[in-house]
Length: 291
Image (cartoon, rainbow, N blue to C red):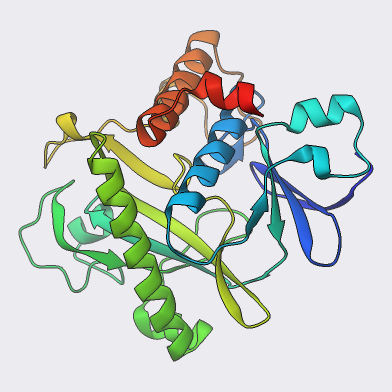
């Protein structure tokens, strides 16, 4: 691609358009246990982009999305434009705040493990006697470091305030919980529980903006509401089939990862597409056709 490549993460590739704008591209790469797998999930990047566009349009909060029309991007060939359709966003270039803003409405994942082991920075204020997957009385804000590789590390409130400053911490906490609640209500109306999610924020000319992907199956834990059972392992609209297969494959979780079988790829794509269609109320095929 003729555009200047700024960098790549596990899923995204970022390109500089000019001093103020970035082309953010969501690939079909998938990672598990902090390793990028050799097998891609078809259209996964388009699901992530389509859902982010949906949420940016729905949420009443300042954000970085400017457009999603790759035809306005100069320097691309026809083949590149076709490949980018549906998976690219033109966004404002922001100074990223180095903290993951995690909001949890249910006790699950790393917070449940911490709670069950006696408590820690994400669960120290919770009452005793909760079960795995219990709904919390109020959503909790559990910030974490932004790790370049490996797992993010949970922060105590004191460490988080020291990292970003008291005023910024309070605004991030307030805004993150408000966005989570708005999204959780929207999802619940569609038979889905938003168990937890993580947001990223950045600053442009002193303005705090919601950035990166938002409320996708990669950044959020979504459960079918009719399957919710406190104390039980919950099915989710994400890459769970990939993790389950890898756990059973005998892989030691160090690179290189094994190639995924076709049925796991198909099943994982189906979960991502179902998440898109249930959360947006629209056909994913129509989204593809409209790009």
